Image (cartoon, rainbow, N blue to C red; front, side):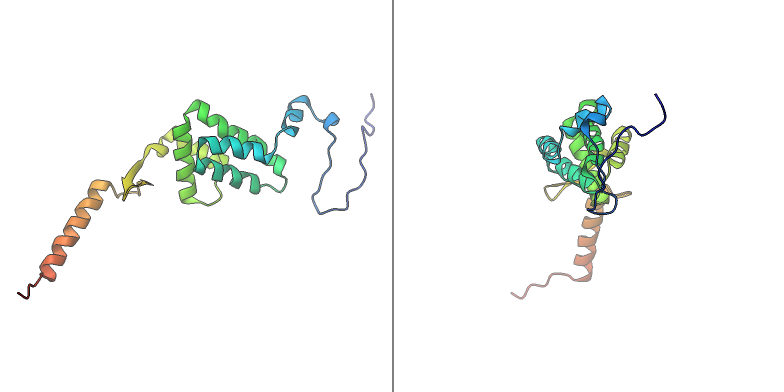
Length: 159
């Protein structure tokens, strides 16, 4: 077998960077990706939760060619098997807290370090802790502020 041309494709006149690949010419492990589509990944992510769904949509939209994001989406969804559905959803929420376009890598970094577990409930909403501010600190701060306010502006009664 020589080093000659293996195949040729007609020239595409669509947009810069456009490519054409025949499924028969792909390696077998890449042929599996052809059967996937964005809707399938979004549906899988939706079953996990809204933050995971948003993260998958961000990953898909971050690539020029949608197919290039499929492996990242699959890897993201597989993190639920390793850690749990709840932790993956929390990690996606935390990643979305920092950036509107999180990547697989940013979510994957959150899970092994346990950053997804660092949440508290504030006004009925699950929020990540901010560095140096714990719920106890916040409560002390609010109590001190209220007591100082009462000292500076005592309540007057006009009866």
